[in-house]
Image (cartoon, rainbow, N blue to C red; front, top):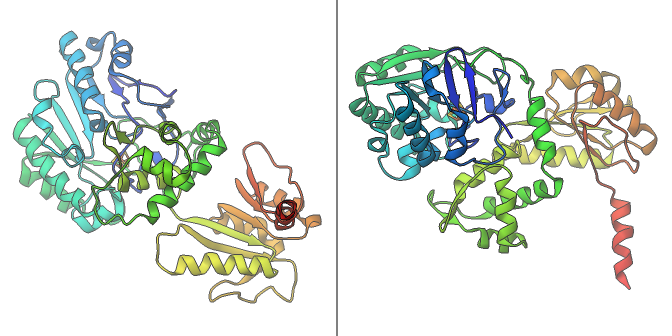
Length: 433
Ligand code: SF4
């Protein structure tokens, strides 16, 4: 279980949820759950009482800030209970750091509910216009999100004494235009520092850089705790949601419906999804579009995934073409062919599709890092597979799809999936008589 609360300097931070209606390109959620030495990944959503027990002395802090691994206002009721506890037992001011989409999410103006229990808001403006916002924050609510953030900020300024709009200083953000938006509303303005060339920002949350790899170590540990069979079902749920015609952004799907389509019980659906947070509303079901985006994010499919094919025979060629052509169709397909390798000098330098040149296998180690290879597909003969896997692992690959008919020995933190057509055919043959 991650930390419910964590301290940075004189402030206490309250971590209510893992969920968020954005998927910002610069968000710490994309790399790992560790902030200032605290693991913020919650295994569920603890009740407000647990937070109250975790804050016995609110008077000791300069400020209590609702700001954790997700969007705190998604848990409005819990936030109010905890903030009220702080107010009743201290004079410590309460601040909420938010993406400003709570009114859209709850379908009503929730700000009056917070008068008297919240003193200040820090609202992520993130961009000077809707187009930039879509690119940087990738909201679940699509085009409706940015106008909702602006309306939320205006309403917050009307009701609360201290409202600050923030941006992260990343390419594409016109900081001065954002400042003008804040000033026109009568809100404060702050630029948050962007620290890495990669994906994360840290503000006063702290300067801890542990787990700053492309996919952080803590995140990996948490992921390996979820049984693989659950992950397989999540992939199936995502495919079902992808196949639904979600023209209506407010369409809901029940666990019964999702379970029927997936061939599992509704209780199983609820249990699987609960491993990653609370996505539904009791008696209503899941917002289908929101759930789809959350599943994409959980499965790491919201970002580009580089694939290397090693062994460009008939199978390797077919796989490379399939991935590359699907990626080229412009649909939301996250995989792309980052590199192709073969030992045969007659193949090296040839292309299997425009832009897909076969590289010599000797360059495997140096090219994997350079080309952003996340998954290695091994389609070499069995005798060569272990050697190829060793080089891939040494170069940092953490996921391998092995078509060679041989078991691979890899470190515990490397995942290998096997696809053995001969074995499957033999298995199926048993059922012919
Ligand atoms: S709004 Fe905040 S928590 Fe949500 S994805 Fe963006 S940066 Fe992360």
